[in-house]
Amino acid sequence: MTQTTTDRPAGRASGAVVPVLAFAGIVVAVMQTLLVPVIKDLPQLLDTAPSDATWVLTSTLLSGAVATPIMGRLGDLYGKRRMLILSLAVMVVGALVSALTSDLLLMITGRTLQGFAMGAIPLGIGLMRDMLPREKLGSAMALMSSSIGVGGGLALPAAALVAQHSDWHALFYGAAGLGALAIALTLLVVPESPVRAEGSFDLPGALGLSAGLVLFLLPITKGSDWGWTSGTTLGLFAASAVVLVLWGVMELRLKAPLVDLRTTARPAVLFTNLASIMVGVSFYVVSLVLPQLLQLPTSTGYGLGQSMVVAGLLVAPLGLTMMFTAPVYARLSAKYGPKVTLILGLLIIAIGYGAGLGLMSAAWQSLVISVLLGAGIGLAYSSLPALIVGAVPASETGAANGLNTLMRSIGTSVSSAVIGMVLANTANNVGGVEIPTMHGFRVSFLIATGAVAVGLLLALFLPGRRPSDKPQLRASSEEDAALERAERVLRGFRGRVLDADGSPVARAKVTLIDRRGRQAGATLSAEDGSYALAVPAQGSYVVAARAQGHGPLASSATHAGDERPVDLDLPLPGETVSA
Image (tube, rainbow, N blue to C red):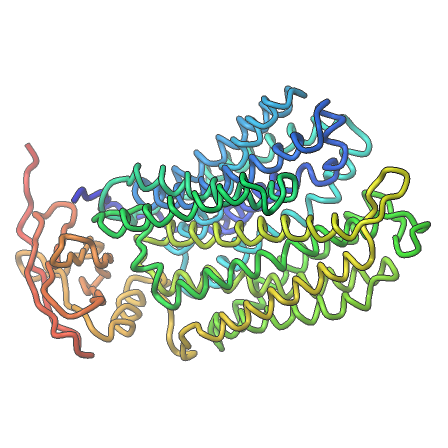
């Protein structure tokens, strides 16, 4: 096993870290929403067939799905800040490529590169976990998680304004400028995290997951064009199933896999990820339906006749409300736990879509729907990273949140495909133009309500957490961190890391290794030298410690698997001189 770590702790996070990381998330959302106002005009703008023009959107979705878990794992191994900057840099290059061309293939290339920005969300959440005080972490992660909706809601009217009054290529120049600003702010404000995962990067696992995801998402996004029962669509789904099963078998055999499937199978992680798919479905339905309803002409009998910009402004509260729910979520979660806030958010989403079935006859009613759904989706999105962070070791935060972000992306992909099919199959042909019907809009809202109901059912299976229980988060001081870790360890090892003369060693890296040589946990010792590590099961372990200026120590120990922690002090050898 290769160990990649650092003994130098990150600097104290400044108050600007959270806004800067949230801004990076908003930039990602802007990139995603960029072309929404000009979707219907893309075939003419790129001088291509409508079926080919959709690749401009599909390519970003596919690359984002692939990049998200991979960049999360790379961040765990080599530094989350470093990978965040790399993700944003690739996005800027992609935006500039798209800004300078109207050629379809070059545009698809540029949009594919822009999809790499999706990795910024799990990387930002991982950085927050590693650096922020416990009392600030809940609201910070909520804001970061909601930034996709916030940025999307704010970008929609802005992009519509630019597209309506300027050359559409200006959209990409704007995205590139925002990306460059996010990189500069990250370099200036955000310190690198000292937390590293053990092992090396699993390249075969990355290639296998990428192939499986592309084979799965491709027929979802193109199924309406190819036909859902066509040989191509069914063949790709079958190939995806085979590749992902083989990938899973391979990952289970590796010591340092790209995705730890054993961790993913824990109820807290599994049901959170499944619920995330349903939240993704519910979020995208309103983004597809409301703008179309608002912009349809009143001559249809149900269209609201609003301009592109006004429609964007009426949907913008969806994102704004998500942003304002972040501090509300933090207070609710601190008192009741993230499981309760997820359930509450899903209930509010259900109320929003239920109300929407009867509130489609005036523009102001769209505003009400946007606010209701924004509040519910904001609470639900904010709960997801807290549930994941509370269930995985710190060294797996990036990869685990990357996988969770991927689940949301799968939800939006499924939503886009299904709602697109529903609206197409219920549309009226008027003068050769397909016009969505009110029946199609209502069926779409019913589908979203059904997805929320499934999400609620899944959320009920999440392990409960007493209000006094807290996830394994970085505390406001090292002493608080030690106390929090000790409270959290029901069965495991605890003790102090000591110098040769018996004095405590602070910020020592303590690693738990199981009998197969795999890392089972890791932490940093507190100012008083104390540490605490939970064990996944009874058995023999090695507890290893290392600190700058000291020799390493590896101590064998056995845990009986009961609820009592085993006391184990770790006396480090004196200073060593490197050759």
